[in-house]
Length: 254
Ligand code: ADP
Ligand code: MG
Image (cartoon, rainbow, N blue to C red; front, side, top):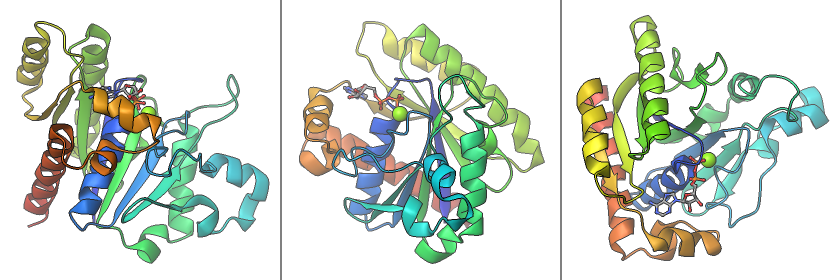
């Protein structure tokens, strides 16, 4: 089982990229589970046809210890399974706590053993890498971390913080950084800025994702580009990134 966490600043395109990757890996015959680790709980909307699924935290609040796997894990389009950690009510409690609770619940319900995914993708908000939001990169959860960034200042800033946090935990059995995913806004000089950060962090750029209107057009239909426009250049970019990640995973496991 290959477990990859996709981190990045809020609004940068993590969920869009993650859902397209899930769809692409599914096309490549993998069983994929996507776990949204953002209090917004909207990570998997493009895979569920736009229907929000109940978050683990909300289900736990309602059903306490009577929660079953089917209450929190939902089939998405293709060969995929969707989960949303969720978050506390705004202003109350710690947002990262939802992630810790979700991981504990996954374990107690033997979700991985039952579904046996080939790939698990965690879609994690990385504006603050507090205890909760760093859970996926600590021992035993994700093996690899990829950071989504554009060339905008705040996005690069968040990427640098995330990289620092990941490298902090790596010696203790935490996840390793595999590279940046450049989700471009498309302004002049942007690629140079992303290249500079990659060089500073000594990381490869795993993919250059262009800004593309098909993303919005697919989103209007609550679908991924990979599913709605499978023959487009944009879909090929996501498929290429999926192949890169699968290859890295194979290499690290052999
Ligand atoms: P995050 O999960 O990081 O908060 P989202 O994936 O929800 O961000 O993306 C925010 C918005 O950016 C979405 O409305 C999405 O349509 C748009 N978006 C993301 N990537 C691209 C892209 N490559 N081209 C065009 N629009 C994009
Ligand atoms: Mg998101």
